[in-house]
Length: 490
Image (cartoon, rainbow, N blue to C red; front, side, top):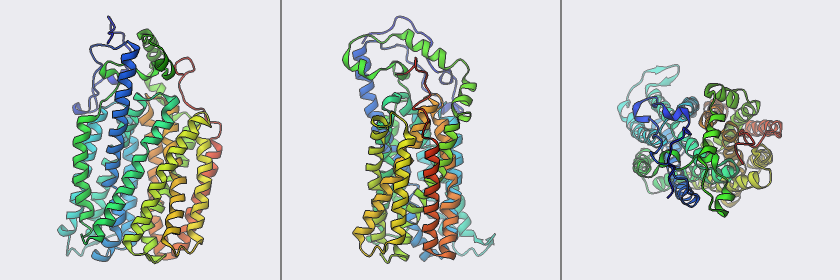
């Protein structure tokens, strides 16, 4: 491998500073720099593959200790006498804290070591799942009530709120890693592939929950078993993840032109990288404001994300209960039908990423528009069709998942590209904040509607939210593909 004889100052100024806490300090730049194109190409290919796989597995594990509550809710209602409104409260408190945490941790994640950040978050979430399951025994027999909710309900709610906060440490390090390792022109395709982790995690925990329920294990096993899986994955992440290309001696992603690296053996010019960083980092604070908070398209994406997540979680969180109570399926079958929502979402995300990069020139808003319109049609079919057959129910749930997961994946990709890698986690955190504020509606709001007005009103509300999301994506039709300067990125 060829090494540069000198060390130009090419590294992000934020990465030269210590992290918010010592343990989160980013890995420093390597003492050597690789400039031979063959070595650069081999290094990027190796670590891109490893980073992509590890972050997919890691983020899926976060779902195992987050979405397990959806399967447990009917059993908790039956075993503990907790009302739908209380269960919806857990979802709402969790969602709000998760959204705020995703925003705050997005800002911190841009400045922290991605490996440490992600591992700490996952381990704490595993511990809180164990505490959640154990809290029922600790509060058993307590009769006090505050604001209409029992002591047991508040204990559950507070622990799930804490879980929501530490869940917010999952996506920011992934955003940091993916935008540091993959250039914008292929980010939509790669990040859509990465977004499979959402569906794998959610479908996996629902399928695991159905298996545990079918084999006679109680609802507490739906928290203990996923916690053990998450702890195991955390060890794997600690071994596998790397922070940035620069920490391994590779040039920054801005210097890469994938086609040239594949077709030539020219050395990477370190001066190019230095000039890029000088142009991008002259004033980091104003850069963040300009690239994130002053960009109207990022705000449109953020508001649209509120409605995407409202629809997504209202369907997923309440589907097992809807299919059990409104459609007459037993819980184990309802869980498997719900899993098709996530499985089909995998294919929806993959196609969405390909369409964005290859048909719409990197403009994810255009893909989102068509996907959201399709989701509206699927929700309407779930509402109006009788769904007497499990196959029909699974097919329509799959269509809904296919369509909603396109926008769910592309919103984060679009704003990450608009904000550039230097503020990607911050931008994704902002859209995530809006997304998880939707828990106010998809959690306790939907629980209240279902309890007092029935499931028909539930579906009417979701259809309305999906229509609003479609309109917002239409307003972002002319959003650019990315926020890098034309001279600084291919």
